[in-house]
Amino acid sequence: MTSAPRLGWATRAGTAALLVIYGLPFLWLVATSLKTDAQIFDRGATFYFQPTFANYRSVVNGDLLSACLNSAIIASGTTVLTLTLATPAAYALARLRGVLVNVGLSAIIILQITPQPASLIPLYRVLGGWNLLGSQLGVILADTALLLPFCILIIRPFFLAVPREVEEASVVDGASRMRVFWQIALPITLNGIATGATIIFFIAWGEFLYAITFLADPTQYPISVLIAGQIGMYGIRWSNMMAIAVAASLPILAIYAFTHRLLRDGLALGSVR
Amino acid sequence: MRTAAGARATFPAVSRSRARLRVRGEGIFLLPAAVYLLTLALYPFVELVRMSVSQVTSDNIFRDWPFIGINGVQAVATTADFHEAAVNSLMYVALVVGVGLAGGLAAALTLWRGGRVAGFTLALMVFSWALPGLINGVAWRFLLDPRGMVDSILGLFHIAPVYWLVDGHLPLISVALVNAWTVVPFATLVFRAALLDLPPEILAAAEVDGARPRQVLRHVVLPLLRPSILVLGVLALVYAFKSFDFIYVMTFGGPGTASTTLPFLSYRLAFEIYRYSQGASVALITVAIVLLLALLYMRQVRREERA
Image 1 (tube, rainbow over the protein chains, first blue to last red):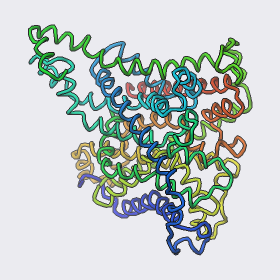
Image 2 (cartoon, rainbow over the protein chains, first blue to last red):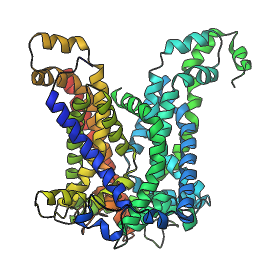
Image 3 (cartoon, rainbow over the protein chains, first blue to last red):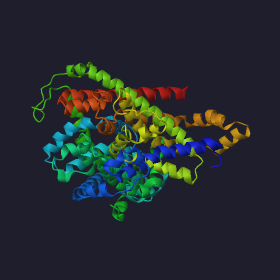
Image 4 (cartoon, chains in turn brown, yellow):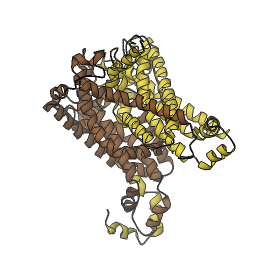
């Protein structure tokens, strides 16, 4: 990277500032989750304190684990369904030309602009009509409807990046459209699909509005609803809350550890083109 | 479909299959998503429109909705609550877009030269983007508590605690800045990609000509980043306008209505006081405003690009 202008001290100071702005909050939260209620707001115990796992011991119980399991079910279900629908659609919207593409993309953009609460009531009616209220399948269907347009927009640029000539050559060789998709377009765009899957999983993991509205039985609640449900109450127990928040972030951290290079390179692709 | 049978069937008519490649083949791929979105996204959107021009209360929400026409939409748009929420939304969006883009640009320039520390910093930043708004919002609600991280740090400099989520316009600004905190990493990624795409010859040439780093930035790098800035601008605009999670967990639109933006007003109308039609009207007006702004913006961009 010798071509970048040399801004020695500014670069160093800027990097340090970024590390503080993005690192310190996480350190603070993890520290809080290891403190007692009395230590949390004690100035003397800001940096020096005896860490305790009491919060985790009181928070990590059957309920939390089952909430994590519920989150995993909802987030994976949403990811699989969304990717199954979005991948071929993104392929079509990258290959087709003409009115259909414009209509499709316009519809996707309007859906993308609509705020989530706007779809709560109509979806409540639709899901109620199908007897899917109070079931995780209903939440998966709603989450997929919410995220499908976004997912198509993420994946489409990856298909646009595949030269048409590559596909046309194999069509001349006699491959069907379906085979071209499966054996040529799909393998080259695996990065894009993985990028889309990671992002959809993360968003679905944190989605709480549909889950809190459509689910009735607390044993079905994902961890996001545990957090959102407590936030409305007066006198939040921050030590416990931060322990739950840290627990809810761990699966994301685990996945992120494997996919961050993918996200780093894949996200920019979508918005630059 | 992965077997050779499908291929053999099309083999005799290569020219026909090329035609099919353009016309029929791809439409099928669009079908599942189209059917799904028609049922679970576009149909609800149409219902939203219908709700805004009907009288919908908690009594008849699951039955027929009497038509009342566009008057309801007009009535909502002239209320004081709506005006406040519209102003709040504009302030919120301006902050998220402005801080998000400026911060992203600064961060991308800072991390441009790469290396281990820069790589780690970027990974850390993008992690905060990857975390759900719910978790970031809860975390920052705690960090912004008068006894939390931010005020503790200010306390080291003997500055009195600031009530970030309570006082006057501060709650709206605080939530917007936290939201911007998660937009910066995304903007950084996009700018970083654009910077890495810059032709090295141009930068080398500027240096050979004796341009100082500041001048290179101002007169060479920034103009080349223009397309990325414009695209990010519209993405951040749309994203910020519909932002909901951060407000929900950090202030719930309060205190009072101090941090209620348009999407949140729509939510409050429908789910706090059960004025479903009014909630639907506000949601639709929000969509219309975003569309209008986005279209005006893109027209302006095209015009400038032609000029």
